[in-house]
Amino acid sequence: MIESFEKTKIAGEIAAGALDEVNNIIKPGISTIEIDKLCYQYINDHKAFSAPLYYRGYPKSCCTSTNHIVCHGIPSDKVLMDGDIVNVDVTAIKDGWHGDTSRMFMVGECSVKAKKLIKVTYDAMMKAITVIKPNTNIGNIGYTIQKIVEAEGFSVVKDFCGHGIGKKFHENPNVLHYGEKNSGQELKAGMIFTVEPMINFGKFETKTLKDGWTAVTKDKSLSAQFEHTVGVTKEGYEIFTLSKKGLNFPPNLK
Image 1 (cartoon, one colour):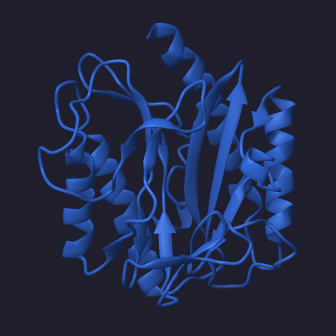
Image 2 (image 1 turned 180 degrees about the vertical axis):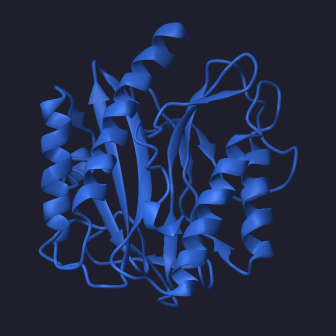
């Protein structure tokens, strides 16, 4: 457990550092491919590898999901506009171990509804992480998220979930972001997985575009997501993908 936690934290800090750098360039007029190049270079400079690149044929180093894109948006020449929201999802591999994280970024001045969606999504993820401890049921994570999100009138995406992670990018267990209290398997010290709720302003249904990757809201409503890689400790939990600069949450939203 000690080695897996230490190695995952190193990889997680690299991934978080890449997102810290993204914060420095986010503004109207930049393209999502510029974000991808920055993430690739940062991870490479830290003698690590980008896990998404060529994973199951994925063509880029990170995912950039804007506005109504739920997840797995492919970086392109698309230019970000004032008022856009964008999730950037990066995973670094260092010494064979993975660190996976994503954050929301606001481009210029965003709408009140976009700001609320981002805040509720972040708060739901962080509150859900606090319930993690040995012998609690994994379903309590999703139950906590769903309760917070639906109380605000938003919906939880059900087509995608968190996942176990370590020497493999994706492994068991699946971590649903909705569900019944005290359901699912019991958590055990040493487990490592992601908590990464995708929350829609409108209805929860999604569809995947013809590129085979980009998932969007069916009703074209805004979607937001945050993600941390988390380990179950003997007493509770440890987050491996925190920003060393305190940029886990959009600074222009505080």
